[in-house]
Image (cartoon, rainbow, N blue to C red; front, side, top):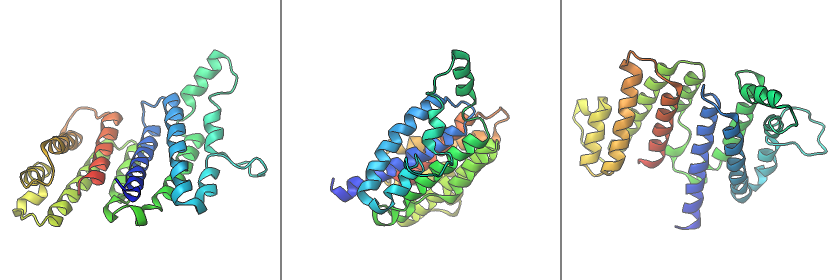
Length: 244
């Protein structure tokens, strides 16, 4: 793998993992300790890539994490938000702070905004490094917003539309002749692409599972968990990144 391909791969992974982290911060089942650890690992890797391919924006990227010591800007940074976990406190106080750190409110909104700005900087490297289809999908962004607002079924339905649209475009790029009704059903699209050899049985099975999750969001009478919808969104994003 050449350097350009390696950079393309690293950028795709960092964008996907950063967006997944953003989704997790909005989840009902959030563990702030996990967010803290995962963000620090992600930030270290992302900063290294920014230094390499976007050196002129390194200072801006780092500024969302922490301000310069000489800066008079007292606005919250990601490090100040996450740092509240490590301040000396009694066991009870620490437990309470841990439970409330990312409750819907100012800290959560600030964290998501700052992480979003970092992701935008990272994505700005996309034109020279990533193909067009790997840029952030607006439909998927809308689905994440719906999920953050508690509209789980709607988020799942939008994710299904995004996935179906992407697979239709993949079929067109491969000059795959589809019957008219093949382009209006995820399962039929998936079978046609698999038979044409566009991807293997393992990928086909993954897409089949995503289609089942979409169907559960739309048709199931049972309560849909935010974790299930988050898994669906992550799976759709992975498909958008890897199936072309």
